[in-house]
Length: 167
Image (tube, rainbow, N blue to C red):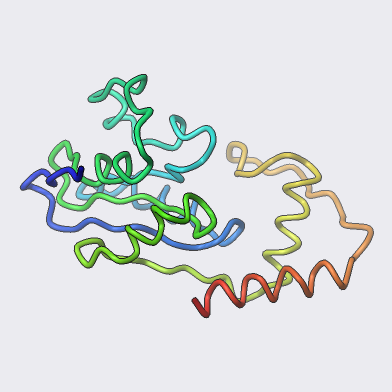
């Protein structure tokens, strides 16, 4: 079952990328635009925090325990008047649903690739060390220093990310 988009929606989009690539900053900026209803990572385990508050107010979130693709299409079908609606996701999340959404020509795909693999790898390792995955307020604490560099782990990470973007 698919949801028909609100007729006021001109553009539906999905921001596709990997973790530690800047998608949160982009979604945050898009949410500030009056013509865009943007959502974060809707397939995140804590997805309710990722949803735009307008969507949350308009839906019974307890009833959202449906198939992921139906949830994604429900999100892309709802607007409070904004003509552009979208969210972000990673390829590794709900692979079947990712393929369905990726094949849907009615949904624009924005692909964000952070070319500096060492920067994204380091950012991932620091986030894992500190369990801080997003910016916390306006003042950033000094980042801890990575004392060890695992060349094999980095090489494997870079190869995996390269393969993802070749796809």
